[in-house]
Length: 298
Image 1 (cartoon, helix red, strand yellow):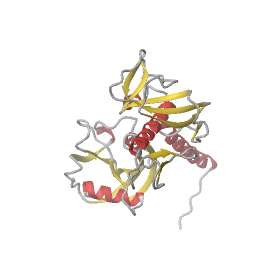
Image 2 (cartoon, rainbow, N blue to C red; image 1 turned 180 degrees about the vertical axis):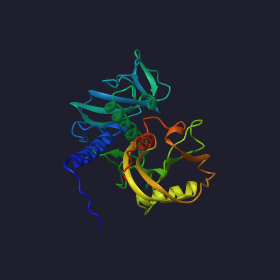
Image 3 (cartoon, rainbow, N blue to C red; image 1 turned 120 degrees about the vertical axis):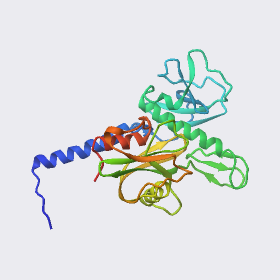
Image 4 (spheres, rainbow, N blue to C red; image 1 turned 90 degrees about the horizontal axis):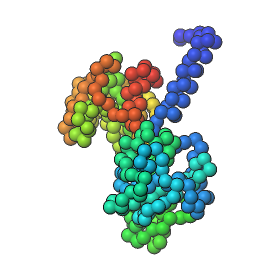
């Protein structure tokens, strides 16, 4: 048995690194709920506050792109209550595609607003987008086909005929940063922008743990066996209604054998030869950046 003795200074340095690592995770992941946000539906009857107004993936913002409306000034297809933040109720509205933006406002690609809108508003907008999609896709009961209505006491739509309850649901998905000595595995799918590479990703299957999903997805997509799977962080992902859960893992054996249905290219990359990677809006960027800075948990 080995016994390791550390000085008070060394222990303090380790703890500082751990807390800094955790704090950076909380602050740097887009779409994470702000600390002052309240999920309560108690203020849903109010109509003044912050309005996150969408037409598909376009969001209504001021012409400089840094403000959102304080009132719902357009005819909407649906409206949902988002929550309560810093003394204001927050709402979301879906607008038809052919509706023009009012004077002084514009429709802007929601993804491109990262770094333009304040990060707290951007996170709430992501929640708003997901709630609108849930409300739209559960207007009718999946069991009997009758119309549903929103319950007042909780975030749920209830069937007016059979009583079936429909709560917002997330699709958990893993992201796997595979490390082999001083290199990581990056790959590109057919739907990726040109020359962009990312970490492997895949949806959780029924009866599967997140760690098992990491091992399976890596095996299926590139034919490699991995181990030492450890959790890195998570991110709500409003574009697909997912919760992305990031892991680091180590290569154990095998050569890259691409799944042609999933992967166009895959390879090992050192820190000084990285290709184009996803932007800071994605958890994939944060995983790769943590590795670049030598901050993977061991």
